Length: 415
Image 1 (cartoon, rainbow, N blue to C red):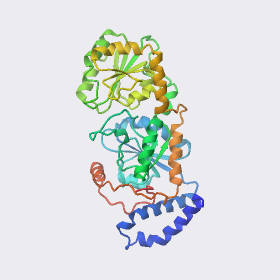
Image 2 (image 1 turned 135 degrees about the vertical axis):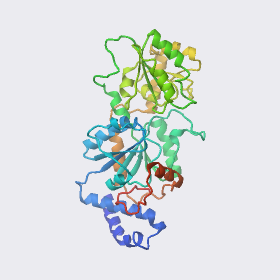
Image 3 (image 1 turned 180 degrees about the vertical axis):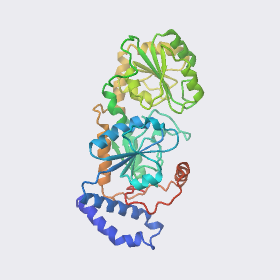
Image 4 (image 1 turned 90 degrees about the vertical axis):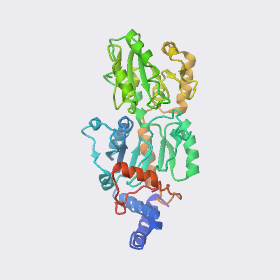
């Protein structure tokens, strides 16, 4: 039986059972089947009206989300879909939105708009909004451990229907987790943010053709246990004074404000402190990166450029790691030579991390999502966890306490 025929049959079933599941006799046991029958009804209506464009919500909470999701937005619009954005919390700079981008003001607007899919470059998303919940990640797996001692990149929080993984070294683990939990699927697509990385950025503001010096990019995570910023301040201060390299500095948006101000004071002809929602031009402008355990270093490696790390927790062979601050300058000098043995290790690692260099990861993500949207709504046998405590925290953060019983029939496949 084709999916179209299956959807038609499910629509008929929906019509027969709606009086039971949605009427006064419907109770808590009917919630799961109600969600799936409503999805079947919606898919049937869409299949009988091909002109209905799919709706995709970009759910963000940090400024770096713009660079992750905009390549995906461009692909959706190219294929005739609709895109709207929603901002969780107060950490997003609203001035970063383009005039052409549409922002939904609150959860009521999200529910009213009724997206088919919700793209999330974060860890959690409310289960009380419509749409297939899609994890697109806010970075690569840098080996960071959470408070439970587990790799945070692979932490399953019961929020997503689909994980779009970046490359072989994360796909296999997520596939194993999918078999264990059984309520989500996995598709290796590559990472949308990387799509523009392999295309030269015209008029890159961080390049200076008149300056022949090598460019050093310094990035750091905000975690007190992992950040290199406070430990290398004196070294960077000296580098800026000596002027051997042209230095660009960019920190995680959650970096301690006192540290940020310290580094801003170093600005001058040899050092520029950058605050931006898009690090790609910075990555392209630099010859070598100095970092710690931030996942941004992995994006830099994908350009086949060396990274010097300070007290990196992985001990990986494709990094030039140093434990002593006084050894950092020597390591940077060595990295600037692009040593053959190191570059071979970087090349091998990149094939496992993100083998896609065609700039088409957004297209693969969208194809995987649309395949899920067209799938049999009753195929999945396991429901997502109720996530009561996590959803309660999200409701509090979003100031949303309404029941969602009466929302439009465009719910997640696994609710």
